[in-house]
Structures are given as C-alpha cells and as structure tokens.
Length: 107
Length: 125
Image (tube, rainbow over all chains, first blue to last red; front, side):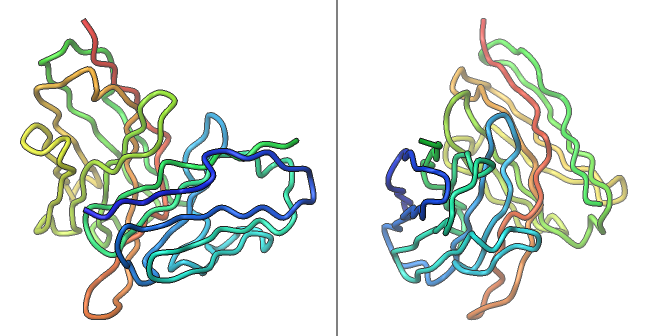
C-alpha cells in the first residue's frame, strides 16, 4: 500500500506568517490528494481536493500544489482561527490513506 | 444542509460486538458512496471501510478485515458498521463520511466532503 508522510509533525508560527506543510506519497498518485483541517475537538473539514482545488467556502489564504509524489499545503497569512491539525489523504484508489498530521500553533 | 449523525458507540469488553449507525439527511443518500473513518484518542485519522452507493463495492482496511462489516439501507438513508471481535486498539471515535466522486483517467475518484460528529467506541475490560 502507498504510504503518506507529512512534514513537519508540528510547527509554530506568528500571525501573518506564510506556512507550508509538505506531504509525500511513497508512490505516484497523480493529483488525487486531499487536505483536511481538524480544529481541536472538532470534526475534520475538507479544504482542498485534486491537490489544488479549493473546496467551496474555504478562505483563499489556503492553497495546494503538487503532483505525483510531492504535495504542499500553504497558508499565505496565518490567522488565529487556523490553529488546527492538517491531514493529507490520497484517493487515487483504496485504501484511502491519511498522512500522520501536522499540528499548527500560533507563536 | 447535509447532516450525518452517528450513534451506537459505547463501552464494550474485548472480544465483544457493537453496531454503529449513521443517519443521513439533506442529500440524495442513494447517490453517494460512504465511509467509516476512525480516530484513536490523541492520534490521527484512519480510514476503516467504504461502501458504494448500491452496495456493490465494499473495501476494508487490513486492520479490520474479517471483523467489521459495512452495510447501508438506502430506503432508510442509513449506514451501518457491525464490529465483532473488538480489540483494545479499536478504541476510537468513529466518523461516517460522505464521498464525492469525479471521473478521471478511466476511473471514479472519491474524496470525503462531509463528516459526521462521530461516536466514541471504547474497548476495555
């Protein structure tokens, strides 16, 4: 099975900073990559699918890029409400594997 | 408004059984495939099982294969997960999640666009 590895596992940044999270697949998955945000104590929420397509209602400060094995989620200007754990997920085929998560905090 | 409401969680002894349900509303249930995803306390997300809209295609994670059974009742807009031979490592919040699909490069591709609030399953003696 394809493994998904995120880095870093956690990060701390200041409000207004640009934040980048990386997700790497152990084999090529084209652009079949989604990103989810899970705020503390809340349900996961879809942010991005097809590696770079923003889900309706998601703020434009979030963006995604990549194809094949290497992907990034970028928050262009970190806001206090972005404190959360972010997960990537491959969906080219079963199993629908998630990355281990990246916890984002405010410095 | 899409709503997914899980129920059936609770405390069960190792080796026991539990049946989870997910009640769907706000969309045409029989037009969507569905999933169960779990999250152990303080841990990440783990996909558990998938069922197509007509129940014709079913997948399981290796960790639950042979012990869990997914099913759906399109007449009742309901998704279920029968969990048998439960182990301590099955302790988690279980979410039902809707799949939205698109056709690309010869296959349908499914990502998860709506999630329920989850139900906690605790396996302990």
